[in-house]
Image 1 (cartoon, rainbow, N blue to C red):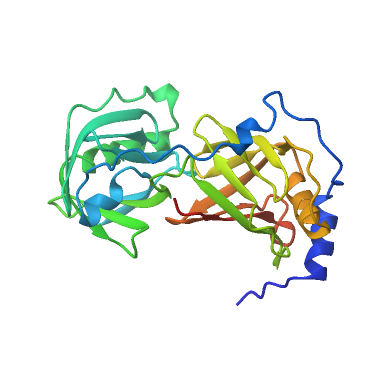
Image 2 (cartoon, rainbow, N blue to C red):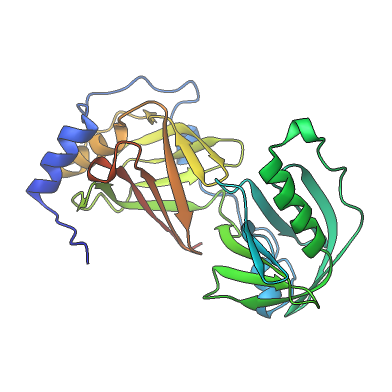
Length: 296
């Protein structure tokens, strides 16, 4: 079991690897502090969907892990290139690994029925042969009536046809992912956690790539792009110039600093947590974030 150490050693390692900047004031953004002070959009009226396994699919984005046909497992293209998202208007959109698709999808507690034509397949020159082979198998299985069942937990589901072939999917972004407050309890470097960051530090990601939030003392704005299983983030820019206690300002310094600008991380989620790691320099020098979704 990996042991996570905290305290002085964590602070020293973070300072060495993240090159923490000072806490002097940064130029305010053109919109001032107003944008970062905004709260997540008010919850929309409750959307009605099925219960059971079908209800888990609704409103969330799922990455395809593999397709099993005649007992043979075919892995999906890397970096979550194949994905699907189910909406409350009885449709599903996504990508088969080569081309986007949009079809009718009718969900019950434990079953899914797909209707409508697939988009035209990508021509041979537009997609790698391995991806095309996977897309063909996905189109064959992801069609007509399918049963829905847990594979391991509510983060992983199997969509199975009447012949026993199935599509294995894993949660990529839960419902309400964008516009939600994601608290940042700590940063990670190697096997070490940073000292706990201020409880007031949070990020709000928006689907258009903008990020707003608070660093513990000051509001900030930034940019973040989610693509497949990767998250590319830009260094935050302070929108206010408040001064807080030394410990809070130290934590803010951690959040203001990145090894590269922008920096790309591999991310994963549960329904209420997210981790993002950059392991491009090897496990001992990996660094990243831990996020916890705040209620409401």
